Image (cartoon, rainbow, N blue to C red; front, top):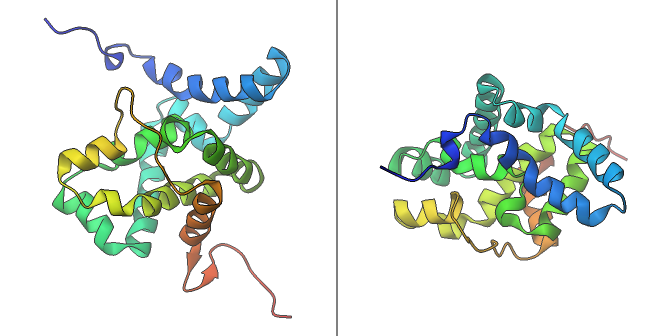
Length: 190
C-alpha cells in the first residue's frame, strides 16, 4: 500500500493554486482583508481561474500557446522537450502556472511577473512561461531525469537562479518579440 499523495484528493489543485500566492500577498498587505481581496482578484482572471477550476480545455489552450511560442522562439528546445524527451506540456508547465510562478522562480522574480500580469493580462503569463524556459534553456539539455528535476514538482527543490529579476524580465520581453518587434503592439514610427 502506498502513502497518500496530493493527487489522490480531487480538490488538491485548489490548495496548490492558491497557497503560494496567498502567502506572498499576506507578506505584502497589512490586513487579511486586503490580502484576501487581492488574492480573489488575482485568481479570478481567466488564466489562473482555469487552473484553479481545473478547466481542461482552457488549460490545454494555455499549454498550446506557450508551446507554439516556444517553437517559434527556440525550435530546437521545443523539439527536444516534446519529441526527444517526450515530455507532456503539462509536465513542463504545470508547476509554473499552478503556483503563478512562485514555486521555483523566487519571490522577487515572481512579483515582477505579477506586476506585468496585472497591467497586461493573461498574455503576460504566456510570455513569462516562455521567458522562464528561455532562462532555463542551458539546464534543459540534460537527460530526461535532469530536465524533470529542473522543471517538475520536487520536494525541497531549490529556487531557480534566473539571473535576477531584471534578467527574468528581459527574457519575458524577448519571449514577446517576433522578428525584433514586440508582438501584439502597434507602434507608430516617429
